[in-house]
Image 1 (tube, rainbow, N blue to C red):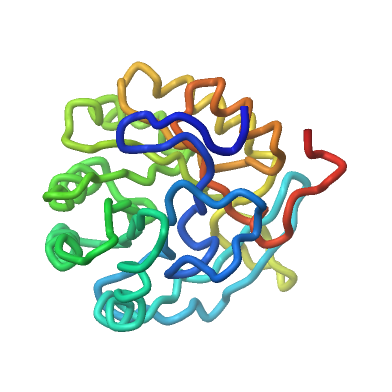
Image 2: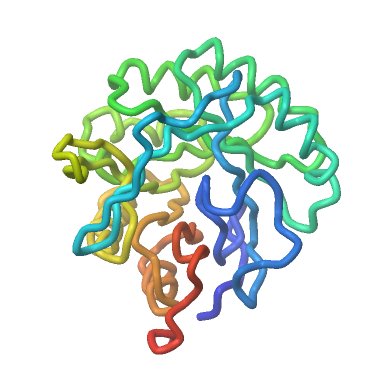
Length: 255
């Protein structure tokens, strides 16, 4: 199976960048020979967000921990800069919104509904948000466009996730989990985990969520072409790639 193939409703089979992997708009040249089936933007907040003061990258055996604070200029500035490019893009645009309140989710979705080229919203949840908060955010982000919930794979076991099939979401993207590692100064840093060591956990998560009956996009641990084939044959509707897009495939691992 190649990187692109048949379409399964909203989501064509193939690869797409994970939120934060390739910027706010499609680049002039794709990092892989095959173009993506969808372009997912960097996370966007309603208001400007500054970088974390203690941002860092910490390597570990299966990958690395990344802590940045998700800096971005805010929705208004993003629209001013990238709206025209979205309208001219040759792939559908999914805007990944990062919210902390239901009011923010509602405001952002309403502003994006009439933007040409934007075909769906991907909703990111705040770290450590409660089950009730997560459900309120999902409800507030529902609008005229399809809604994809970005669900970290370390949250899949929470009871509220079992009810997602009853809510008006179009798909789930299984995104990077969080972890903690010591920095050089000995302080403990929390951040997102990336790397090929996450693939077994991501595949297990994929199997666990199949009973929901929703399209599932696997978005962690995919670092080889064979990983894509395994994910799609295992029932994923599509695959999101993250840091592999920054370094390219290891040609010795390409099959």
